[in-house]
Length: 270
Image (tube, rainbow, N blue to C red):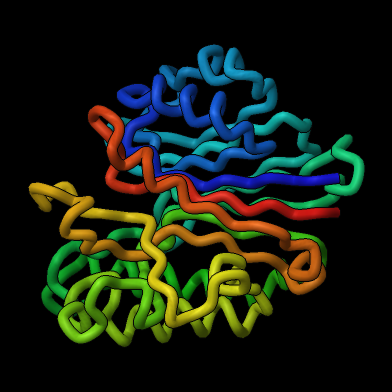
């Protein structure tokens, strides 16, 4: 069977519920993982999302910021969340698929890593300190829990562009949060030590440029094309051979009142 999994930082699921519906209608992934839903659980638009053909939905949110959700065409047997850095700030949720033919038993982890603010110095910027601590805990979790010991997919807005060609200018962004050496080395360490495969770069290696985010600050984002690859899909080693396709749905950045992130999708042949 084919399994398609998408990840998208939606930057408010209620504000952009029509865009979610449009993307699902046009692309029909089996699973959509959302970040930055900015929505407390009691007003989460569950019925609206289910009406798009995704009856199985799990979410963890809070008012005004953060928040993660997973929409699926297949049921899942277990759901869980982790509190990172001692904070219940809705940055992780996990499901394990069932009744999905060859996909049954695959665990999907959905993460939203802190952005880190503007100053890349943990002594001067508490947000950047939190981001580095979060990645340290992710690294420890990967070594302790062995998430890649069984079929697994990790997705999300990880808020780091790790490679030189994941940003529009490597040299100009070395001192900019999301591409500083301390962040990129931390992300690659936690990915490599746990045995995750970077699905996007597995199919489209450097030096090809890949972006999934374009700043709202740019007056003409498409013409300037000063993007960064902040959104990621990683696979456990046993799934790497089933990877068939990867798509960055760039056109959503041009929709009315868009998120500054666009969906990323992988297709597996199981």
